[in-house]
Image (tube, rainbow, N blue to C red; front, side, top):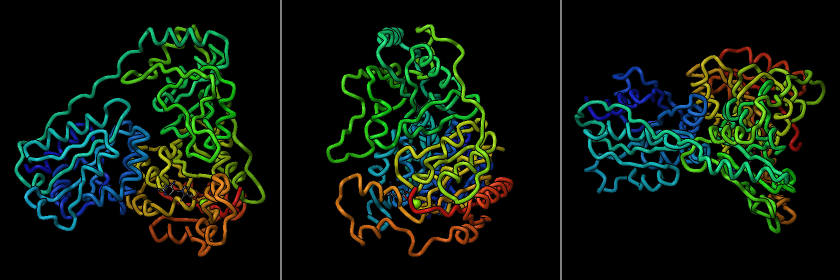
Length: 518
Ligand SMILES: Cc1ncc(C[n+]2csc(CCOP(=O)(O)OP(=O)(O)O)c2C)c(N)n1
Ligand SMILES: [Mg+2]
C-alpha cells in the first residue's frame, strides 16, 4: 500500500467517501488510488471554485465533510473564494492539496508557492504531511479537525513522494470533542435579564436554524418572553416552510436591519455574529445593535447552542407549543415575467423536501415571501458574500440529497463565475433545476453605486455593471455543457417551463428573462 492508498482508505474509514477533484501531475498517485478504494466516489469539477463550493454544499446537506483534491497553490487559490464562503458557514471540509515531492521543493519549479500561507487564511487546521507512514494519521486528524466545534476547514498538504512511497496502512477515526452542556449561571442570568419587560429580540443562526429542535427552542423563548425572533442574514442552512416555526431574516440592507432592531433593549445572540452592516457607507452606522441595547450570549465556545436555547426556554417556563408557519402557495402567475411573478411561480411549484441553493441576489428578493408556506424545505445561502457559490453549492448538495430535488435560484452575473458546474451536474446525473435570473445586469452594484455616494456615474462606470453587450444565451451555454434548457419571457411561459424542468429527474435549466431593475 502506498501513501495515497492509505490516505484514501483512511478518509473512507472516517466517513468521508466523496471527493470533489481537479487534479494535476502531483496528485496522479491519489487519482490512481481511487480505483483501489471503490468506496470513495470521485467527482470531477472543471474549475476549483466548483470543487470547493460543491464540497461546501455536500456537507451542508450530509452533515459530514467531503474531501477536495486540489493542485498545489494555484488550484487551492482558484478554489479559495468558495472556501471563504464555507469558512463563514462553519462547514466541515477536508482539502487535500497536492504539492511537489519534498526533495523537489527547494528547486523553486514553476508551480512552487507558499501553499500553507494560502491555506491558513481559510483553514482552522493546516498540516503538511511529511512521510508516507504518517499520512494516514494526518488524514484522520484532518477529518477530526474539520468536525471540531461548529465545523471548519482542514487542509492537508500532500507532497507527491508522500503519495507514492510505501505506507503502513490506513488509520482509524478519532472523535472530535463533544459540545459541552449549557452553563446554568449564564442561562439564569439571561432569563432574569429578559424578565425586565423591556423590548427584546433573539438573533439565531448556524446550528439553531438547521433543524426543528433549534427552531422550536428559539420559538419557545420568543413565545415565553414576547421577544422578536430573528435569524442571521445569511444562514448556511435554514429549515423553513409549512409546519415549521418561522424566523424573520435580518435584512441585507443596513437601513432595513436597523428598522428590525430599532428600540431593542436586549438582544440574545445564539450561534451567529452580532449584527454589523455588510459594508461601510459614508455617514452610516457600521454597528447595527442600537444604542442602549444589551447583547447577551448563552452558548459561546464549545457549548451546544440548541441545548442552551432549550435550557433557556425551560428556565423561562416557556410553553412547549409554538406558532408554526401556515401552509399556502401563491396562485400560478400571469402577465409579465418579473422578480415578483418569478417568485410566485416558484412558490406555486416548489417540491416538498426541496433544497434551495439561493444566489438569486436582487431578482430573488420576493422568493422568500412567496415560498414561506410551501411544504418544508431547506434554504442554503451565500454565507460569505463571495459570489459564484450558488451553482457549485447546488451541485454538491445534490450529491448528498438522495431523492430530494435541488433548486438553484441563480442570478446571471454570479452564474458566470462557476457556470461549468452544469457539466458536473450532467456527468453525475444530479437532480438540480437551475433558474437563471437573467436581468442582464450587476443590478445590485447599480444600487450600491448610488448608496456609497460615489457621485454621478459616467458611461464607463455604468458599463462596468452592465451585461447586455452581448446578452448571454444561458440556454446555449447549458446545452453546450450537457444540460437541457428553456428560455421564458412571460409569467405563464416561465411557470410551464419550470414545471417541465422540475419533472426531469436530472439537471435542467430555465432561463427567466427579467427587467434590469426590480
Ligand atoms: C468574488 C466576488 N467578486 C465580486 C463581487 C462583487 N459583486 C457583488 S454583487 C456583484 C454582481 C452580481 O450580479 P448578479 O449575480 O447578476 O446579481 P444582480 O445584482 O443582478 O441581482 C458583484 C460583481 C463579489 N461579491 N464577490
Ligand atoms: Mg444580474
